[in-house]
Structures are given as C-alpha cells and as structure tokens.
Amino acid sequence: MLLSNLFTLAASATLAAGASLQQVTNFGNNPTRIYMYIYVPDKLANNPAVIVALHPCGGTAQGWYSGTRLPTYANQKGFIVIYPGTPNMSNCWDVHNPASLTHGAGGDALGIISMVNYTVEKYSADRSKIFVMGSSSGGMMTNVMAGSYPDVFEAGAAYSGTAHACFAGAGSATPFSPNQTCAQGLSRTPEQWGNFVRNSYPGYTGKRPRMQIYHGLADSLVRPACGYEALKQWSNVLGVSLTRNVTGVPSAQYTQMIYGDGTQLQGFFGQGVGHTAPVNEDLMLKFFGL
Image (cartoon, rainbow, N blue to C red):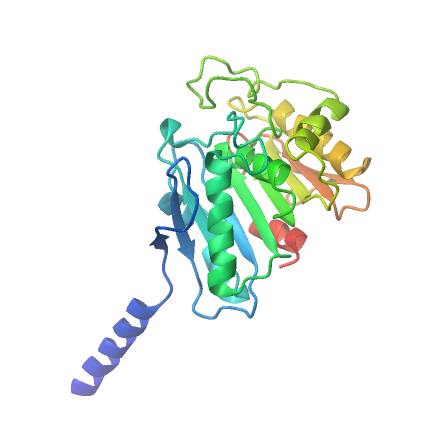
C-alpha cells in the first residue's frame, strides 16, 4: 500500500513538473499592452523553431492554447509556441492600425515582435524558423505580421482571415464595427494588394514569407472572397501564379489551390465550412517544414 502511494505521488509530481502555458511579463517594447503567454515543451529541440499562434476575435491566449493541437505537436517536435493575447477592441487584433501595418512603427504587431525577440534570445531559437498562424482576427493578423515583418517570419497560415491592410482606413476591426467592407469581400487587383504589403516595409528587398490561406465557402461573417483576395495579394508579392486545383485535400469537402510548385503559396477552401475553418495542424506543419 505504501509503495503504491509512493508511485502515485511520484506520478503526480511528474505531471506537476510538466510543461504548461506560462505568462511572460517585461518581454520588451509593448505599445498596446498586449499579453504574452508561452508554451515550452519539456523536451526542447536545439535551436528550436517558434510558432506565434494568434487567437480569434473575442478569444484569449489561454483559450487558443486549448483550441488547437499545437501543444501536442510541440511536445513531439520540440518547438516553442507563443500565444499573444489582446485585451483591446473586444479582444480583436488591431489589423486596421497604421502602426501595425508599418514595419517598426508600433501597434499590436510590434508587441508580438518583441515576444519573438525575447523567445529567440532566451531559448536560442532559430531565427530562420519563426512562423505565424491564427484564426479569424488572428488570421487577419497573421497576414499583417507577414506583410509588415517579412524579415522575421519564414511562413504563415491564415484561417478565415483577410488580406494584409484590408481594414486599412477603418475605425476598428471587430464584427461590431460599422465598416464591414473588408470582411464582406473587398476586392482589389493583385498589384494593389501587393503594394499594400510592399509599402508596409519600404525598401525591403529580402525574402518574403511563404503562405497558406484556409477559408470556408459557407462563411457569412468573413466572406470566402476574403480568402481569394488574400491569395491574390500573396501571389503578387511572391511572384507565383495558380497552377492547379486539387480536390479532396485535406478532406473531401476541400479544394486545394496550388501556386507555382506549391512551396510558396497554397489555398484551401471548404464546401459547407463556415466561420471558422478548422486548423489543420498536419498540413500546416508540413508546409512550415516542421
């Protein structure tokens, strides 16, 4: 009986000592006072990769930690996940803010970059393996981060989001905002969309992030056109064109859109899928190279 109790106590101690979501304060420049949470697996890879995971509108870092299987994959593969959280604007990211839409200018975007820099320095993370993903408002912010900070991110995956700078000029970017032109499928030419990205970091000539765009064709909150507009934007920025559609990837209701050879840009659109498109960790991590 005593031996059994000792085994139980040992197992409990092991669980208690295991990796968990932790809040980080004083991580650097944070102009909009957003929150930083981080998940560092017990078995961390040498020079680990880092994924920034951005919650949807109305969400929280803690909620998004439980909202995908990324922590499980982090345990298996040894990468770190940063979970930013915003308490502002109904917990929606400031994708309309000129500061976030400009490299180094401020906004939620600069706070997120501070989180990345903190993580790289503390855990000797690999700066060539920094990724960003998110859903809904987090998907919108994924495109903003990739557009404003191409020097930081290797690749991104936006679920049910909008193009970079789609909300530019709007007073806010929530489902309750009076201006919903963007979310209803604002259309621009590929060149116009591409210029928004290029103008976010004038003079930058380096590598651009590879991108995946996921969207539901039954989404009435952020219309499917938003996903197609994001693909127009990144196809222009990355210099790749649509080469083929593949039905049944990742499941029967989806069609995968391949641009170029598929290593730079992919789209996924699901019949009957509403808001939001489910996160597909397997496809996303494969695209990231993790």
